[in-house]
Length: 425
Image 1 (cartoon, one colour):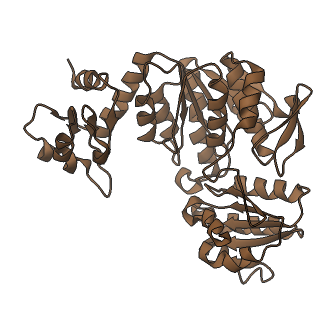
Image 2: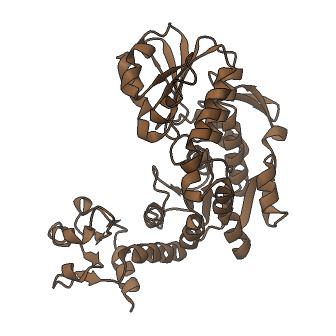
């Protein structure tokens, strides 16, 4: 029996594995990972004392003389191989998704849709990288009927590696935009990196689900079969984007808990995949419309009669430009936009931030304030606009908003723009 088989035998006793020694419970596996700032191997003894049935280490220094300790060459690779082995053993459909924008919202909507028929295991939080994806796969049990795996990346080659771990049967890309330009080496690198999802599915005969309204995705699919094609512009009629997204579908009007016309694409994607999995349309539409976003993604919160639209989990030039355009075109009155720095843009940083400011210059019915050092670099160039270095300087600006104002808040996660709500208490 190989070491991997021994680990998996232990795992199958209760499906409990952790990489955090503080979360070890009796009978669980502790797998020690090491990073730039920590070495989980140091906590092998602590894991044993907490009742771990097996402790996996990859540093001989911590290879304690205990039958419950196993030394492997590379703990991370062991974790990934174990996840793939588990995925194969369960033998249930795996649906994978990636994209520059909207992948988490799409994942949540698709989880709701699929749950009308199946017991679904979906990526929790932002567990979408080389560690998170294996942990997601390993959280599935024999009770689950479908796995829904979100895949994130900021370098070429990452999606390919995640696909090799998860072995998806069905895959989709929400869109390809200007995200993580620094890591990908520019927009062409983003296209190359994200399209690895399609390349993997083509090599394995998997099914691609794609939006034919997106010319880039259509070009990358290149008439591949099997593929499922959908068209939001053909199948949905947009009624309103704000304060709530509403649309017509099959002649009926629906109102959602989401904001922004861009979420119509996410809804269409979820419905298309659900239909592929033979879920009933009426049930899918109902649960999707009942979905309430959280975690600063298209989340709406009202405080002191100011209506906040929080989209502050992440930001890149593509999503920022779209948000400004749609919010600017809305029929809302007393509109405010708090826009924060966009990160990981590398040499494109200054140019992309300048483009966003120029886009805002043409919208006289919105009161703008730009937050963060990257935007603030343009303070002297655009004297008529408001710039602050951090969210802490926004109190006066926000508390002076008139009642029934609509405040759209968008920026990269590191700025913690959601803290703007604290000023309203």
